[in-house]
Amino acid sequence: MRKYKIFAIICSLTLFLTITFTNNSTNIAQAKIEDPELTELRAIEQKLAPKAARQNMIPPIKKKKMVAWLKAGLYKELFTAEPTIHGSTGPHGGNVRTFYNPILTENLRAGKKTWDVGAAMVKELYLSSTNQVSGYAVMIKVDEESGADGSGWIYFESFSGSADNAFYGKGVQLCANCHRGGVDFLLATFRP
Image (tube, rainbow, N blue to C red):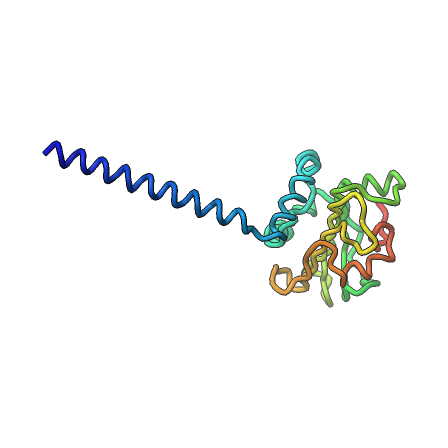
C-alpha cells in the first residue's frame, strides 16, 4: 500500500511540475511576440500614470476602456465644459459640446501655446439632436512634442459611441490633418 502512495505522490508532483513549466514557457513565448501597438500603449500608460494618479482626469488610452469611461460620463464631473451645445464648425458635423480636462484648462488659463502631456479634451457629438449624445471625439496629448504629423496625440472619434468603426490611434492622419491648423493641434475655440 505504501508503494502506491509514493507512486501517487510522484505522479502528482510530475503532473504539477509539467503544468507549471509548460505554462511558464508558453507565457515567455507569448511575451516575446507581443503586439507592438500594445507595447506602445503600455509605455504611454506608464508615462501618463503620475499625472493620471495626481489628477485622476486623463481618459483611458485603450479604445474599449475609453468608450466605457465616456459612456459613464466621468468627464462631465471632472472637465470644464463649454457653456452650451452648439453647431459644429468643423468636420464633426451636427451639434457638439467640448469638455477640457484640468491639465488643458490650466494650460489655457496660463496662456500656454503648447499643452502638457496628459492634456485632453472630449467632444460630445449630438449629430442632429441637442438632447442625445450619439458619439464622441477625444484627443489626449501623450508626448511632449506634438510633431508636425500629430503623432504626439492619441485621437478617437466614433459617431455611434462604440469602439467599432471608430477612428483611433496615435497620430491618426485624418484627425491630425484637420487639427494641424489649431494651437498645438487644439482647434476648439472655447476658452475657460
